[in-house]
Length: 472
Image 1 (cartoon, rainbow, N blue to C red):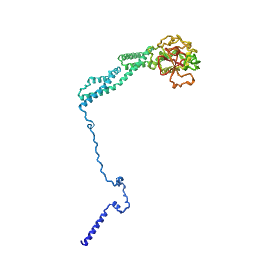
Image 2: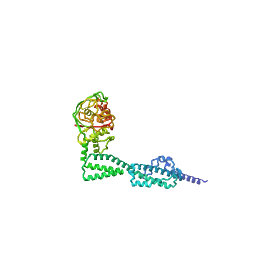
Image 3: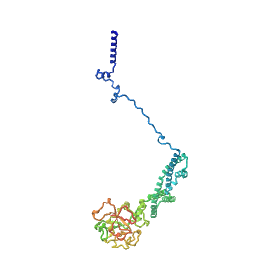
Image 4: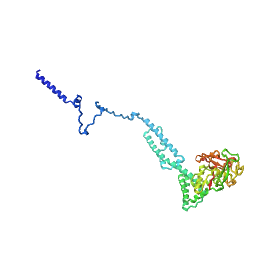
């Protein structure tokens, strides 16, 4: 090769190397130790592309994994399809359950209350007609569509019948209301003659006829509403009516002058709770001549439209009111105070014993015995079975009847274990009130003036009544 050709080859290689070096990227030039001065920032910063996140630098871009669609399982994947026989048995079982529920509702509907509440209902009659019991398919029934249709129909009827059942409660409430009002209305008619206008008389006659019809058909809703309207008719007229009730309820009161006496067991016949015997000072007061009678207490109940209390089938009228709790007796006193503008209350033990002793210090106001002077076991006879009407025996020296015997009498005092002043119990924590005087089935020793009987205030008994005091 001549020298000229060699020279041309060397030049060509040099040019190629130069071109190659010139085309390298800036980052490659920096890596090769070229110009390392910081590049100037572009003027428009808004157009700068975001930098690649640092953690992605130097990493190869990975292709996103393809999401595998979630496979939805069909019902056949969960459980095998029911066979025709299994579907038929299941349908029969569901219909049997529906019939059991329907039958339970029918049992309630055919009680005495249910009949009066529902039997006359066209809806109920229609439901029963649509679902006679003979439609219940036998175990051999094979028409699946029919069974499912009957079950659907029966379930709808069950929902409809269930909606009717509040009428049973309504009917029962009406019956209870009527049962409560009827004796009050009859008691009013027996005891009071009222002068109604001709139109009011016609209205009452019409309503009484409605009551009669309601009783015959046992439609207590009509009877209750009619009784209520009758009472309202009289009460709209009834200032006289109310005044008559108040006059009947008001007992005859006996004035007691008051004074000093020794309270407690003075004859060594009592219990520890009657000791120590202490001197007491009693202010003047009035006390009812007799125990509050049924006639007086009934007038209050009628006025207030309250249930008549039980008389133990002995009769009412002049017998002492019995089966009255302490609260009920106190409510009677409060009512009488309100309607008369006077101040009535249950007596305290001091007031009661002072009135019972009537200035005596013997066990009884009549002396040491009660022979033929009270109603008790062994007082007037043996084998007692009930109370007597008031005023069957002589009064004590204050003019008070039956302070000994007939029925026990509530006081407003709280029972204590003794008369020691340290034993006083605040009224709000009182667990037992004191009853005094003894009753028809007690022996004479229980009728002493000093005897105390602790009784829970909610108690009711045919041996327990009350009398009132009036504060002057």
